[in-house]
Image (spheres, rainbow, N blue to C red):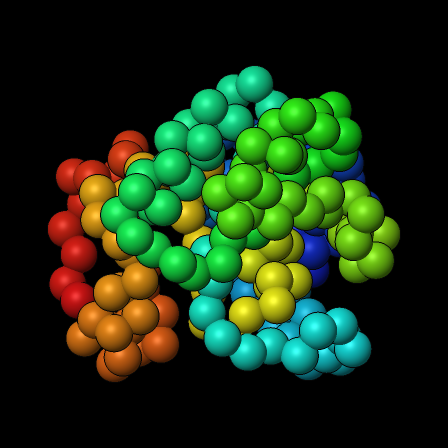
Length: 186
C-alpha cells in the first residue's frame, strides 16, 4: 500500500532484505525500480577504465558452492575450442584462494576480485546476484556473454554472438532452470 516514492525511499535507505516473498512482483515496487533505473541512466557518467572492445565471457561466482561448477563450465568452454577471454568475478579473498586462481589462470581465465574494483565503493549492495550485473558492466569488452556460475555449455558458445536473435536485438536472454516452463516468444 506504499506509494512509489515511499518504496524508493525504502529501497535507498534499508539494508538488503529480508523482503516479503512477493515484494518484487508488486506494481509499486516494479514502478519504483523503473524510476531508480531511469535516474541511474540519467546520472551515469562513463568511467575512464579500459575502453570497451572485443568480446569476452563473464562468470560471477566464488566460494565452495559455486567454484566446482565454474570449473566444470570453464573446462567445457575450453574443451569445445572457445578462445574467448574469460573473467571470473568473485567477492573477496575468502571466496577463492591463490591455488584456485592459478588453476583458472591455466585455462586462460582472469580472476577479478570485485571488492578491489574502484566502483565497488559506490554500490549499496554488492553480494550474490548483484555481482552479475556489476561484473558484466565493468568487464572490458564491448560484447559480453554472461554465464551463471552453474552453467555448463554443451558447445563453443561464441556462435551466440552471430545468432539471429543477438544480431536483431543486441542481446539474448534465457530463463534460469526454475523458469523453464515459461513460454517465450522471440
